[in-house]
Image (cartoon, rainbow, N blue to C red; front, side, top):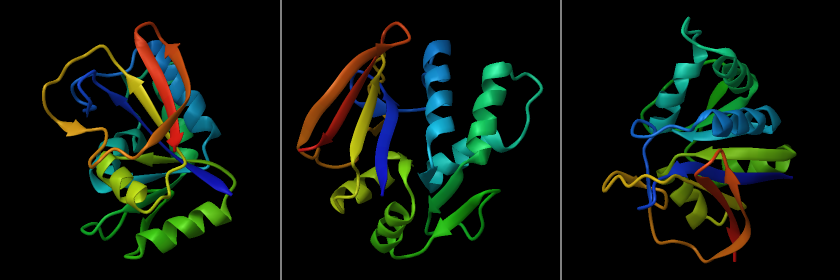
Length: 176
């Protein structure tokens, strides 16, 4: 059975924003290894739109960017959206029955499936479907934006904490 993992970069004041701060080289390589080992990813529409950047080659990319793009393109992607009618390569739309679809994905696959997007994570948290939360805490204060937890924080139990790439701390939690 697959495990659902919600992990995102977060500011000290609890916000996620891919456009305001980015991972350093060591953390980016960590994300490459994670992407290479994941069964796939479940995306909300907004984060999927951002991640579509990796579908196309860019001449300015270095080795790490090409490695991440290759891993991302290989992954199966499931997109939860009320507005999209089609998605890109190696991706499919999740139907109206989010809970049934995600329970089926968990039953059909082994390994880790990434959950991407705080609003989607809230819906899956409310359904009791997320198995692990990974907060990559950056020493940045944004003051506004989308919070990591889009709703009330569920009771959590700390599983691990470690420093990645200098000043970034990964906090790993499971539902309590």
